[in-house]
Amino acid sequence: MDGHENHAHPDDPGQGHGHGRPDGSGPGGWVAPGGAPRDASADAPGSPSENAYDGPDRAPAGEGPPPEDPREAGERPVAPRDWWGGQDTGAPVPPGAGHVRRLSPRSMVVGPINQLKGLLLPIIVGLVVGGFNAWVLAATGATVVALLVGGFVTWRTTRYEVAEDRLEIRRGLVSRSRRTIPLERVRGVDVTSTLLHRLLGVAVVRIEAAAGSAGATEDGKLDAVRAAEADRLRRVLLHRRAVLTGRSPEAAAVPSGEDARTDAGEEHGGAPAAPEDDTVTHFTMPRSWYLYGALSLGYLLTPFAVLATLSGVVQQSAGELVSDYVVDWVTGSDRGFLLVSAVVFAGVLVLLMPVFAVVSYSLTHWGFTLKERDGSLVAERGLFTRRSVTLEKRRIRGYEFLDNPLERTRRTVRLRAVVTGLGDTANRAVLLPLGRREVVEEVVDRALALYRGRLDRHPRAALYRRLTRAAGPFVLVLGIALAVDMAWLAWVSGGLAVLGAVVGVDRYRSLGHGYDGERVSVRSGSLSRSQATVERSAVIGWTWTQTLFQRRSSLADLQVTVGAGAGGYTAQDASQAGSVAFAARVTPEMVRPFLAGAGPSGPGDRDREPEGRGREPEGRGREPEGRGRERG
Image (cartoon, rainbow, N blue to C red; front, side):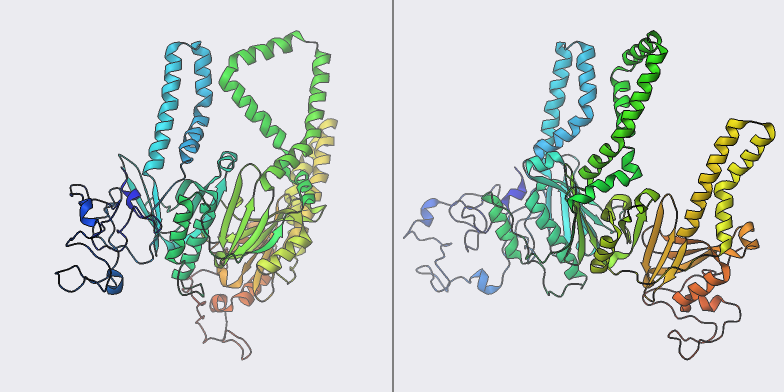
């Protein structure tokens, strides 16, 4: 018996608080363990009873004044004992608190299947090697039964409840756990559905929070709830978080009556109710964008990843047999035939690279949409595994444009958010897949704020450094090859030197940094180029670094330190004097106190301060001494 089942639904006449009776009695009413059931005749019409209650204006014959109606007296309803959560009989129910819920019954199927996937290969190998004898079959059956029992126990013992200011998740039969996540600490709610989840109509809800737990994580996971309930839960959590932190214009959280309607709908098999939808769609992926997967170097290598996975599976299942067969086939075949086979196989593999790239890219980003609701950006994508990531806009401090040389030939970029306190940024921070740069900039302008300034070019000395580092080693090898008269090495090193020079020039042309009055933008890289744009308010410091060769050229690497994303973005080989002036223009209150001979700001300067003191940025403490200095 699970005590959570005793929480009554408002529409259930056979449970709860007895339809207004103070003692909770009535037809089908709940009886505490050890208590005596009521005599049914006492409730019959015309039968006197000391607990009989016909309304606030009538009293039993021969008795005193009528009992006071608990609803008029303002008393809270009395909840039965929560045997699993530890709630005592008579404990008041918090006003507006949500109902205790459980996972979908289909979780009894999802959990065992997910665990069975990891045991499938060992089971098959055991059955084949063991010759399908009785002991192996019995062990396999016992394993399957144990997984099913474990799934039932997990479903039976997992409970969650959204209260006014917290989310509680309880699970466990022998070793019980009870996790409480304050709603004001919730950073995001992600909803993921694998192919199995989608077939069963359920989803996984992951709650990311920052509550300072000992394990450096406060993430909550619910696997699996109904798909409609997952969407409702996400919206309720984010809505109540916004109310608690004062970022919502509404004065109250989701009404408790909505929870009651949701429970009633689930009892009758209906979909849970959801708050009013105020979603704004910023982007829906067009079909033509799936072809851009052939421009991504990572997706082009998909065939090699598939081959590596297949070889690993073969080695684990029948490594020796396959190895012996391959060795015998190679040693017994003609060399010419082997050479032709290798060339054909390599050619087919190369031809399949763009096909595999487009297919894998489409599976990952199928139906990509970017929406905005409740002050958050929601990115949804995936065909077999559907993933929905929610990023609160106040935590998005900027964005990145990412591309490579092949993608730049079609003027395409990828968009990733610069977010505070976000893990797995490679997957969770994706705001747009690879697409036309003009379209991506339009989406950024609508959803966030587009950088409208220009990027300052770096000195010519930065070009010489890139050419030296990219082509210099190959030029050295070329000279040695010519000296020792090694023609083949000279040709190879010469080709690599030319290719390195092209890459060096492209790396120099990609360098740049700028400031448009509100946002700072830094760009660098060639084979993997990134242009990061962050808000001025997100800048918390500057770091200058110089090597021995940079000093001789009056160059320096300027890192813009921010409390989001990668933590810092570097303008490589910038002019030393120009980088100092740039930092002083962006955050004068932070840099000018450390400049030699810096006097008070001019009358037209917005950040005028007495000499030797810099105004602290709004909402932040003053930077430690030494931050912003030029370092040798």
